Every structure is written in structure tokens, then in C-alpha cells.
Length: 180
Image (cartoon, rainbow, N blue to C red; front, side, top):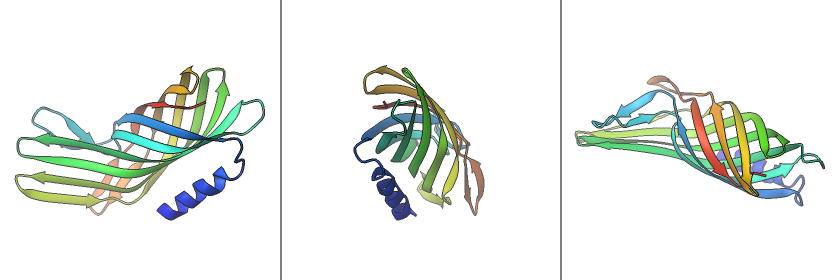
């Protein structure tokens, strides 16, 4: 599946090679079901954590009213306590169609979380849960406050499934990117 996503990203970037630009993103995501909690009440949530992503963005028309943004990323979070630690991680792929109006952009698309994995070690006992790949819709708003610098908010809705059950992995994110 990872190879398919990378092939799709490369293929789409070849559609308009002169108009495609590098896209970089750093974000914080929160929400979803709680997987672990430390003694200081720090929480580890499904679908939450820090995200770093790289991809491409391209204008879809000459006026700049619409654009397409594709990125692959890595989402992770961890929590530690006196009796152990827990972490969650996933690969991500986002595809977002954007409508641009001045410094504002409104987007709709989908997010895919590949190979989500939870691991916890508490009092010397390790638990690991591998979830199935998950896909869900996303909505986002971005504000370009400087050329090539965008601050935005994103909401996604997806679920992580495993033999142990289903978890809400939807999230609310704040991101900083070089969006145009």
C-alpha cells in the first residue's frame, strides 16, 4: 500500500511539473479515544500527536482559485510515567482540494493512516496493538499570513480497527506549512 501511495504521489506530480511546488508541514493533532494516561494526567490518544509531512501542491487553474495538495507524513505521540511508557505512530497520506480566496484557503479531502501501531510497557509488561489502515474525510482552513507561510486548522474523522476493537481516531489539528 505504501508503494501504491508513493507511485500515486509521483504520478500526480508529473501532471503539471512546472506548476507543482514542494509542500512542507508540521502540526499538532489531538482528539480520538484515550489509549494511555500518565500519573500527571498526560494523555495518549488514537489519531493524535505531532505530524511532519512532505509533499507537493499545485494550482489547478490559471487564476489560482483552486489547488491540490498531496503529502505523506509521520504521526507520533508518546507518554511516560513512573511505571512505564506508551506510544502510538502511523504513516499518513493526505489529499486535499483547496479553494483559495486571497490569504484564505478552504479544503476538503481525505486522510489515510497506514500501519497505526500502539505500544505500551507498564511495570515491565509490553503490549503491542497493530491497527488496520484507516481512511477518512478531512476539512481544513488555512490563513497565509506571510508569503509561503500558512497557519491552519484541520478536522478529520476516522477509526482504527484491530482484533481488540475499534477506536475513534478522529482529530482536530493545528498546522504550520509553506502553503500558497
